[in-house]
Image (tube, rainbow, N blue to C red):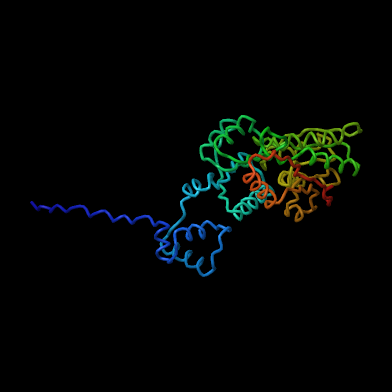
Length: 344
């Protein structure tokens, strides 16, 4: 019998110590205070450019990264801005706006963290956000109430900013009136002579916070006229659009507001496949003014939506963080203007 000699397990690799600001200071030949000033971008203290370069090179060589928690202790608050991830498909226009906002906040030395807490809403969501101790929270859509705002502020949030149709007590508000989008479409269709107006209402869960106000806006524009309004439910699905197009003529509509450009493209393709002329039999209007709408044939009439620049909102957040006792601001930030093209 062959005996296999026992071999001892190899020793574990020696753990490298975590580099500290003192290590960076020694390598760069400066004080720890200078390292702190340079890496925290402190503007109150003048540091020469060669010294800054030496500190950055030393930190990179050692793999040193400032400790966010320690920085928060020194400042008395974190630099984290929490943005709950929307639990509905917000579309390219809002995605671009949110990306611009994150970039602008990072330029002001905030760390933006997206929180993907699916299923959490209202006060329950606020408690989950508060556990991370953000200095500010940007809450899109509805659901957050005064109690949730209070929970966040007691946990250290200096600014709570909501993006939605109404003000919440204690929070700064960016008011987005989607009824204005519908009103502008209704007025446009009336002026173009259309009187049997349909409004696509997405069946996708969560979109009602946008679609219902837009529907109500069209209703307001048509009120007191001889025009009629028909709600037309539709899922964002090619088969659903084809089925709707197959019975379109039975609806007797001469125009349709398709909620947004993506739904407009969906229903336009289905109507054209069914042999229904646009705009000869049915005019189509979208919203968001995406570039793809200009590439369609016929070119898509749409609503150009004006949102605040990410830089403006970032400056609002920064001001609210620096002045937490200031009275909450409310600002209407959504403008709507119809862009008339070939489809209407």
